[in-house]
Figure 1: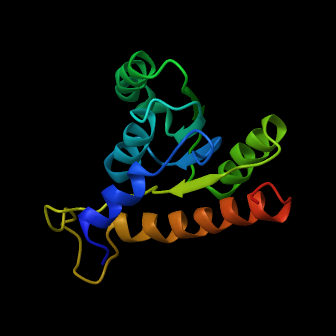
Figure 2: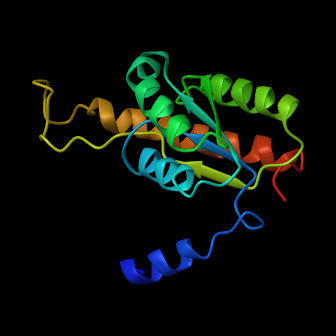
Length: 156
C-alpha cells in the first residue's frame, strides 16, 4: 500500500495543466468518493465533476456541493441522478454524460456499501444478505459504466 506521505506529495504536484478537466464520480456521495471530490475541489483549480448518485442521496449531498462551490468557484459540480446498481441506469447515465462531454480525464467508481454491524437478516443462515446481492449488481454496473465510456472512446 502506498504511504500517505507519497500520496500527499503526488497530489501537491497537481496544477492547472494536470488537473482532470472532466471527472466522473460514480457513487461518490459518501466515503472515499466524497473525500476525493472534496480534495480535488479544494485545490482551487478549474475542473468539472459529474457525481452520479441515488435520488435519496441528493438532499444530503447538496450542502457538501454548496460548500465546495463556495470554496472553489472555478469548480463545476454536476449532480446526475441514477441508481447505478441497475445495468440499464448505468447505461443511461453514461449515455447522458457522453452527450455532454467529448472526453473524461478521471473515472472514480465507488458505488456500494459495507455493513460493519454484522448480519441484519433473521433468515436461515444459508440465505444471502442484501449487501452481498447488491454487491453483485454493483460490480456488473461498474463494468457496464466502464465499457460504455471506454467503448465510445470517451476516456483517453
